Amino acid sequence: MRFSSCYIPTLKETPAEAEVASHKLLLRAGMVRKLTSGVYIYLPLGLRAIDNVARVVREEMNAAGFQELLMPSVIPGDLWKETGRWEHYGKELLRFKDRNDRDYCLGPTHEEVITDLVRGEVRSYRQLPVRLYQIQSKFRDEIRPRFGLMRGREFVMKDGYSFDVDDAAADASYAIMYDAYMRIFQRLGLRFRAVEADTGSIGGNFSHEFMVLADTGEDTIAACTSCHYAANVERAEVVWKGTPCTTGCSPYEQVATPGAHSVEEVSAMLGVAPERVVKTMLFTVDGKHVAVLVRGDREVNDIKLKNLLKAQDVQLASGEVVEALTHAPVGFAGPVGLDVPIYADAELQGATDYVTGANAADAHLLHVDLARDAVVTAYADLRAITAADCCPRCGAPIELPKGIEVGHIFKLGTKYSDAMHAVFLDENGKERVMIMGCYGIGVSRVVAAAIEQNNDENGIIFPPQIAPVQCILLNLDPGKEDVSAKADEIHDLLEEQGVSVLLDDREERPGVKFKDADLIGAPMQLIVGGKGLARGIVECKDRRTGEKGELPLATLPEALAAWMETVRQGWQARMA
Ligand code: ATP
Ligand code: MG
Image (cartoon, helix red, strand yellow):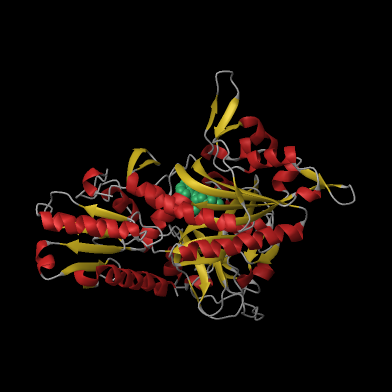
């Protein structure tokens, strides 16, 4: 490939709209362009990176026994009405009508289509398992499309689906996918973690997210520093080891706390530490109101609340609801005399001598003993894990790194097969519902995540498996015939060795070429110039380490192969 005949519109300035590194760099390196909010054109180099990810994904999916198919992106609304998602999916689903006034949507995911396909064909247990996948552009009308390819509205996804005869077989499909995902992200050269994710109504350990570790990640992981435990903080269990307090306290009394709404304000005004304050949060759960109590220095985890109450929808109660229930402005809610079911975090069991809201304007209560003064419906793990908590498995300290979700595997059970009547006859001729699993990878997001994890002030540092080209070959003197001839020769040599190469043959100053080479981020750089040739060498640079070297022209093929191997091994070692 020659730069002069490629469409690689690099930019000197960082576009103002981009906030995170991957977005800035993909624009600057001439790899993507925005068409409209959350919708991008993948330019030739960007597309090569996406295709490289897709290739590894495809190879591992095929090796795992999944077969590729391609479903349409335009989906009849009727299928989505069968599962109820036409109503429930919300505004992320882009719905439209055809000329005959029939409903359609652009596929954000394909459970309905694949289940429709399989129920139409599969009759007998002998035809199962069915394991299929596709790689396709999805559309989700995200509320906040941002960060370029990280959260687009149109993006490339690999979505796989399995249909099995029973739970054990479905668990085997799940395990096969878990292993395949581990191989995929290892091969892609990314530092990542597989983390337990929320399974909602399905339960069990049958949802994992694959997180690329990067400070700009939108997710937080609770990762054990000692054992293999890692979970999305949405799910991470909190083990409360403390013993309930049994010593009582004096009767509670109301004190004035004018204008003190937040825990910080209350604790400052009363001179009481935040951990001695109970925070009372009101939620609307499937239309009914409940209160949740946590210590003042903790946060409620609303996913845990949703799972505890087996609810569909959990929202913070509106200001009006809070005022109606507590007869006070927001900020003074408390458990004493509150007439809604009260759920308290396990840590508050036996809590005595606490400060709580008084359910009256500008007032709090001192000396509240929860068991004595309030009616708590249940104590449960309801709070978000913190760095001060310990691993729920082994008790070692945990850390809370940020991650970017690049893959998600999920045992669906019979959610869709029940709704859409995807059944088969078992060996006794009895009708049974298929057990499903679904397995996604955000192919375009992987490219962005790789850049978030690997970049510096000069540009992208692509892992070799993802890089649009393995090597950028700089011809510093394109005007000189002997230099150009040597650059051409090396270009052809690399291609013969199966190494993708971009030869910068432009009539540009060396400074411009060095900058663009670093920006585009090929893992290897080779520099050919008149001065080097006179000394019988070409220069080489490892983009990741910045290490430079010289390769003798006399033994170039061998020297080059050896150096490239060192660069690749450096990437491998970094993974370990
Ligand atoms: P998120 O929580 O980030 O919105 P999700 O849970 O909605 O993700 P899934 O439905 O599991 O995602 O989709 C499978 C994969 O597709 C995700 O793991 C992610 O890598 C990718 N993905 C999801 N939404 C987007 C998006 N808007 N832009 C790019 N990739 C996405
Ligand atoms: Mg989403």
